[in-house]
Image (cartoon, rainbow, N blue to C red; front, side, top):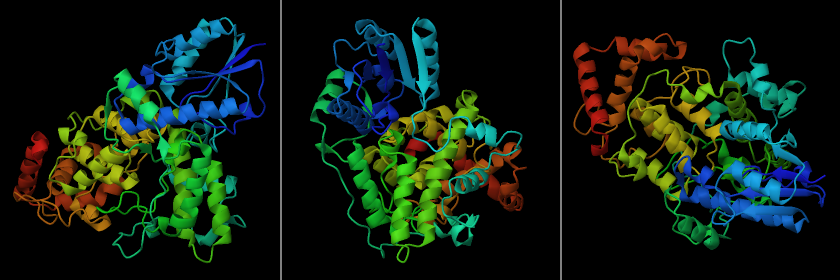
Length: 510
């Protein structure tokens, strides 16, 4: 029986059980498509990364003896549509059974379900064998509960998989070392040179240019520096353990003008296209910690593992629990557009300039830059979550919808009214100053509120709390801030709101 198996661009798991032994009756197919490059405007490095990794994966499959049909973006047979390409391959190879792996994006999930209704051959779907959890585990875990607290899920994951546990209790006596993960990096701890891979992508770039795919961001080098093979991903993981893990937890929330990555692993792209699995990462980090526990504190390791088995698995589970309605959530009724400087970095606010320029140059920003700089600003200026979604999904190399939209619409923009985050992640200049050196050489003064050179975040913060009072004043985690707001003199609040409204109306002037 002739079988066609579809592999999507974020399903590059060479260790999947599908690929154990070559089979003359099985054809694998991968497609580079305008369907995927054009539904949002992507960073040039994101398109390069996906095409580069897909092409290398195709070659790796062929080297293992598998039969692969691969349509490059400019292939004459490429219809640029997933379903049309599939129909073409089904007919050409006289396929009798169609199989695919569970898509992690709801849009593709629906497209393939509808496609299977139109074909009169057998079809089936299999697990990607990548995550700890199944798609609907969180829906079951939180069934009947009023809140979807990640911490509860995270603790359950630790117990279930015996990760950092000792005799049924959390190793070290604490479940969470988050309070130890908030140090500002001041240059006193050396950061090792980044591990950069020299992947030649000349052919990929030429194809992108000839296809006239619209992109954002920059790519000024000749080689792509993120891992695009499993071997490279494992090398990056090894480097993280040996050079970066020792200080990861301490500075995982820190930001600095001189450093792009600090002690972060740079593994997110490799993980999100499934070159390596969450279990690969956790097992390797734990093994290294067991061998070098005298030098590495548990707060470094727990802070990292929490991101993988807690945050990452939680976001994926929440995505499948809340879609498709989640994509339209806008419970704060925000309506504004993103300013032009989100595509140029041309702003006098140094924190935004740094985070956005880093994103444009590298297709990268770590979670605090995304959450507390760009996301914080977008929420304070009451930007429509659709605008924020498109920017975040497009600009980051590692952005795939299941993890992007839950973070953007849930954690960052509080558009879901608190399903994912228990409070809006907003702040004035004080938090930014605490966690970075961005305020040191800024055009604006972090301590001033309404003067001509006052940091915009300060007036925007209090304006946001006041304008969103009906939606937020009963949030138990916001009560302290509303008590401060309630003590503010009316003329002072009026000045803050006047400046904030001017900023919102003239964002590209700031």
